[in-house]
Image (cartoon, rainbow, N blue to C red; front, side):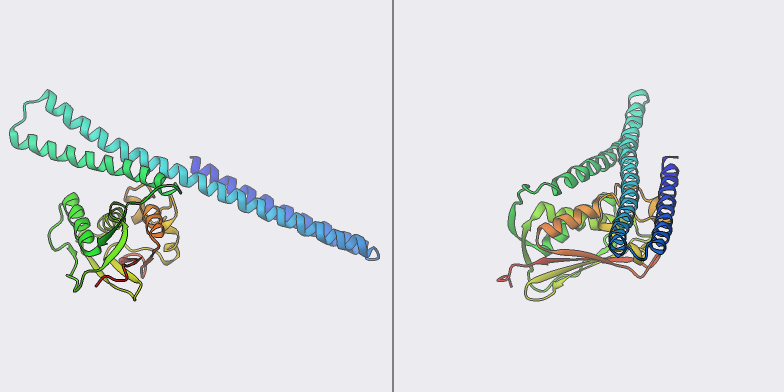
Length: 301
């Protein structure tokens, strides 16, 4: 209901702005026709008219942006509430079952596994919110070390495979010839690649197939490509997906729960490391590819 109300507010202010512009144009034209001989007043009138129109346009743009931002914040709060409430409710249900019923050892272990998975989901949501806050801190210090990027990618792959119980062939990462090293914070860069792999798994179809490629882009940069064959991204949304709280307004995308913070965190970390990230997709249903470029250690071989 709140979203509908805000959409009505957007329409109202757009209509109001349009009416004010039309009235201003009519008054200015009439005033000009009646005062052709008063050149000085005509010049001042044109200037004031331009100021009025500019103010109306800026006011309308500001209102629309504020309404959209509030809608995104509401969507974020709803998503975070769901991501927190669902695993907590699940853990409570299993604990109550364990407390009130006699359960055999196999079933008990199954319950423990589900609760641990829900705990991981809960911790991941909290960590995302905290990470998004840290990325906005200008004084946040990085623990810079020389990192073997291939090894870091393999660790990230194993984490995601364990988290989603994926088969060995679900994520393909061919061996690289020589070591490719970068300077950076290993924990933060692992956050980048686990987030991207999480998304690749989450937005894949029934059959999960992810391809990872690592190679030297040129003498200064290394590039990592993470490709999936899932639901894809509309071309008009490719640049917007890295904004904070933003989620693609697609039916398939909206079915997948999320906070809208993952790609914002990824872009912030990559940018902080002197790199860049962008996405490619041929459209909905055609998969997507995320390309991460990072400065490498020049003397590494």
